[in-house]
Length: 458
Image 1 (cartoon, helix red, strand yellow):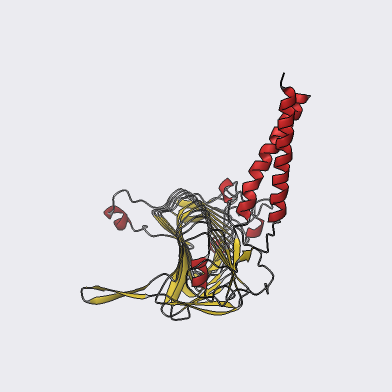
Image 2: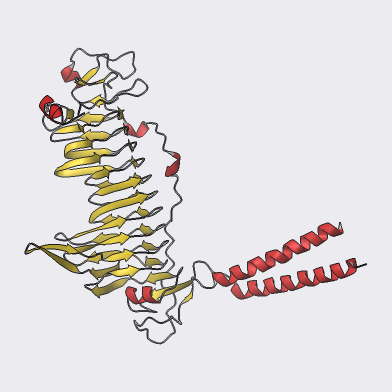
């Protein structure tokens, strides 16, 4: 019994010692308010420490001229609301080649640290534009409006892992170059992916792209174009990817596959294509099922076209053959808008929803179980890969504004510690009380151990 009591006292003593340094760490994470503590976002970032939160009050703030804002420490930047406007002026560069200028713009914001976030801001790029580029991991860009005007360009580029871009309106492209990233619920011009294990879902855009990529998932996105863009989904030299429940409408080519194999294209809808719904270029062993291909602009245009159907082209390139793919899964194929036009005598097989005449695509491809009516893609049963349950940062709740104004002297932009930065109100911690309790507990337990072991002496 005495041994158990001694062991219990030792464990309580050690727990008290471990708790004490954690209390001190909690007190280091502060909140900085713009413009209360510093007049500009740049000054606030310069004076922040790792783990700090920078809150920006509603208003319009001017960024540095011909400069890039560099975020090189792990901070969370949160705007008060959509009227928190940051105007940025990235440098416009000219590179001369053979006496001709080649123009480009620098990044408007570059994030080089891990675990950073940009939330609830309106970020406006001055002409000719600028991008937000991240070069770290666990970065969050959420609930922002990122604009550059009709004659300029902008966008977000991820170069890292376990990053998330969610619920933004972006007048430009989202480019993903990395692994285990998630892009969801955004409105953007294009979304392009180079990498593996990225999850792209529930976005609205004017085109989706994959290049030199494997094991990515595109789920429930909407690629819409008016007038016709080139291709709604463009897959180039990419393998083992999954396209589920996406809607593609209004392009010259609905989906285009170029030297890509072993991809799964299931329960998508490709409509209103100017040329063709699907175009394959030396792409084999893809699984295509439960999709809707309908309403092409020209009724005489086939829904599937093989770029290398011309034998003279195939003979000119070694090992080039017609694409051969699989067009059904579990005895269910795809819906073809011209099925009854091609096969007017076709009928349904025993209320299965499947036509009794296979749909011939070309010499190498046949859908053996064509669907006779448009398929409701929302009802399709899909199984996402296990890795789509990503460990990603989530947006923080915006603290209630107005926060108390700083009582410090008028701030300056000089990089010095902020005396007015206060502990983060969203995570209050009774620091002094915790320290007192920890010290008293450790003292009492220590004294008890000393008395106990003295009594144990012979």
